[in-house]
Picture 1 (cartoon, rainbow, N blue to C red):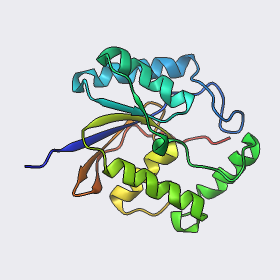
Picture 2 (picture 1 turned 90 degrees about the horizontal axis):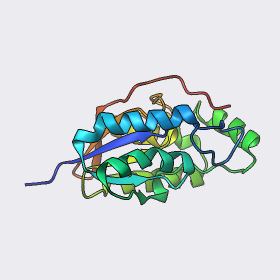
Picture 3 (picture 1 turned 45 degrees about the vertical axis):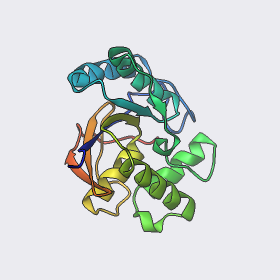
Length: 185
């Protein structure tokens, strides 16, 4: 009998600064409240294993889960934001806005390799877990699960929970979290 692996992908809470304003912002007050709310909504599922992107906004989103379940989130670099070819927030934001209109096969090898690593990491998860991550990472997983090669195939709201299952090394969509048009400024 195989073990059912369910992945609960939580988009981080609302950040204190936008993508065009800061490289690694923390959560603002509303984002911290969102993180606490989603942790309480999912509390009965756990304790589950917990992984997080190394970026502040995702780590802070994992904190209420850590407190509720008396555990420490594993830092997982593969679920971090998509790498951009530049570090200046304004330039990087313009690049991402343009990239989001296209398909994965149109992106440079660095971003395609990031996508492959993310999917390999998710499909190799040995147990069900909560993963605090980012808009593009969730889109990547949903696209792979549904066969959609567009870079953006869903619009997860801050602290929404998208649920996937892993069967035979493949992702399968169970449910999308709350959707809201994202704003990459």
